[in-house]
Amino acid sequence: MKIVAIANQKGGVGKTTTSINLAAYLAKKGYKTLLIDMDPQGNCSSGIGVETPPNANIYHALTNSVNILDVIIPTPVENLFIAPSNMDLAGIEIELAQTGHNFKELRIQVHQEALMQYYDFCIIDTSPSLGILMTNALACSDEVLIPLQCEWFGLEGLTKIIQIIKKVQQQDNQFITKLGGIILTMYDSRTNLANQVKSEIQKYFPKECYKTFIPRNIKLSEAPSYGQCIFDYQSHSNGAKKYAELGEEFLKRQ
Ligand SMILES: Nc1ncnc2c1ncn2[C@@H]1O[C@H](COP(=O)(O)OP(=O)(O)OP(=O)(O)O)[C@@H](O)[C@H]1O
Ligand SMILES: [Mg+2]
View 1 (cartoon, rainbow, N blue to C red):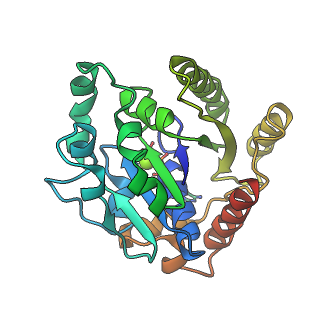
View 2: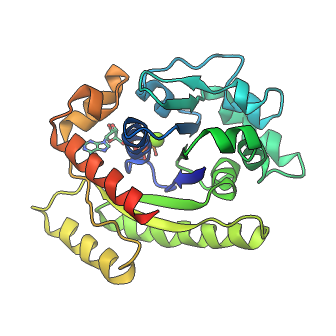
View 3: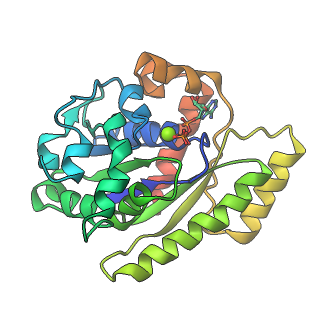
């Protein structure tokens, strides 16, 4: 199983939209895919149309009261499963800070033989912060994909998250995560700023920058309120076309 964290400490850049639609694309291609919602906002869970069980969700797996295998539930998309979350997760930073292995909890749960063998891909949606939840996601993953909105502050945040990835690598030699790619989101080719940001990213990260850009597309913002991925909500939309392109590029890079 390949484990991919979708991360950026900046809020509202398209992490959840990318997690849901990349995971759904892989599942629709026939790959057994697991989504992990590591955000107390629970947008990934509701966005793919599942209701988070109050007594068995990712919070309980991270605090070791339930095995993650008993937390994973199916989604409306065939081959796509999720370890869902809710607001309970908000208090976990303090709880995990008190235990010794606070970076490794997610890793210990996910790196179980039964889980690793059953799934082909695991996509982890993270919250907009640099705390213990994000560090757990990075420590668990093989690679990180960074969605980046085409605006100037986006570039400043990028340096920070790359530093965090390096720090996680130095923590423990089990942590092998690397920067797998940067995905430009909500891209509007008509604005100068979007084009400037794009050329900066391509200049400094020629290998990491995905060739596929995700444009602004209203259907992408509507789909989660129906609890659907873009392919089920509006399969002919430009959003669906671009996320399919992104999925293909992702597979080619593996
Ligand atoms: N390509 C797009 N076109 C139009 N709207 C989009 C697009 N991508 C995301 N959105 C919308 O922008 C908002 C933020 O997106 P999303 O929730 O994916 O970001 P996020 O990085 O997960 O946010 P947070 O940091 O709060 O978790 C949402 O309302 C979403 O529906
Ligand atoms: Mg989100």
